Image 1 (cartoon, helix red, strand yellow):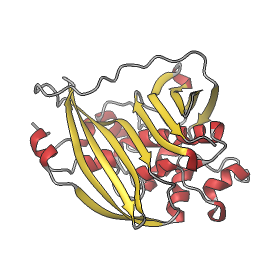
Image 2 (tube, one colour):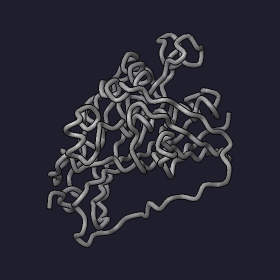
Image 3 (cartoon, one colour):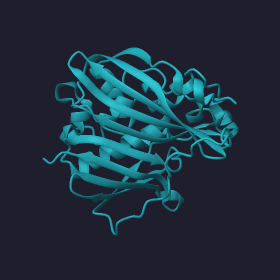
Image 4 (cartoon, one colour):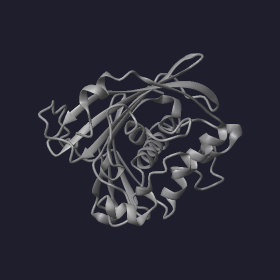
Length: 287
């Protein structure tokens, strides 16, 4: 089978030296829709180098190169057609605020391969640290269509969570027609997000927005709406990619604030609030 579970799990971790600059951080923020209105002091924290703070989800692109989903396909024991791969979910825990400029070491390894019957789900864990210590731990769930059914462990259930009544806050965020083309410049050059022919081969009628772009847009909305714009309060951010976003659509982001955590659900307005992100939670420190 294209995913050799034993070999993938037994492989030694892969270590990569990464670095980034304020310009990389600014490009990422622009790629997830920051900077509107351009002169808003709250937006300048994402776009102006003299005031720059790093949204924690920048960790998913820090250092450039292929994102977790594509990186997983080059790990030992994995030989999969990119057109059969989807990003199933993403979790991120930050150990301290991310610096605007850094050189770090990232270590990647596959920690689980689940048999979902009609698909396999690989979990790629990434740990990053610089000279001062750990920076973040991330896990990408890589959904490979047609590779299940070998009798392996099914892993945790991804059932739809119950929503706790009316949300505390609801905001809408427009997705630009060229959002995916801009976000690609952070390093994710998967043709699914730009090439109509490849998108059709993957089962979509047109290119879709990167799941990690929606992931970043949503975290920014939570930070700006409920955390006073303070990116340093975010401890972790977890979401399941329940559906796709198309460039030009509008995201409706619903938030339920609890003690130290915000539950989030995201839908596509133009498609009747079709689910985009579910099972999503931002953990934060009290301000």
